[in-house]
Image (cartoon, rainbow, N blue to C red; front, side):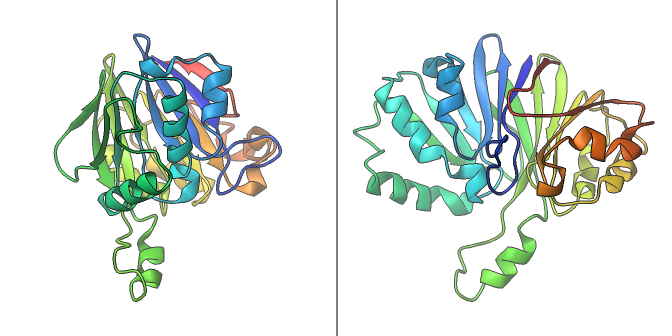
Length: 257
């Protein structure tokens, strides 16, 4: 299985980083994890065939994680995609997205491929292509949902971390979290790859998370602006003696797992 980071910034793009987006490849098929702007551009420039992209997981409804979806679907229309595309996203976003896609003329019958927008299941497994997955709700949007409760009761603060299985590997994708300790329930058994954001917690908390179970590989992305340039140098004191393999991802970072 191959992992490619298409974007590694948090919140907004920087001079060297696009917004958050990850591409997983298995047996020539692809799964996207989140999508800020731009996403179509790096896919096109890598000659990724749209008919080989099976779906996408949107961890929460912040624009730097979901904002590219309308343009991505418009790109698929222009490219004459024929194969199905499945999107798992928070239930609070399903109907608003459907309304918006109709408003921007990116819905049936103009969409010329099978499109499914499905709510993330809070219990039980899900699957897209070769990837099996389950979801853990985290606390990333808890404060924002409380602040918007009076004016926008439909904002329920749904934010998820994802557990994926593929090619015999167990992978954890943090999405955005309130703290990396939100991931503790997923550290009950070995982790081959942890894809972890680094914008919303102190790096030292990561050492507490991994005190008992150390992932085979940890790839950091979604960097806080203070770690935008050379995070591997700025965080050297924290991770210098960490026994696991750590990757400080940049746009274009790619590796096999």
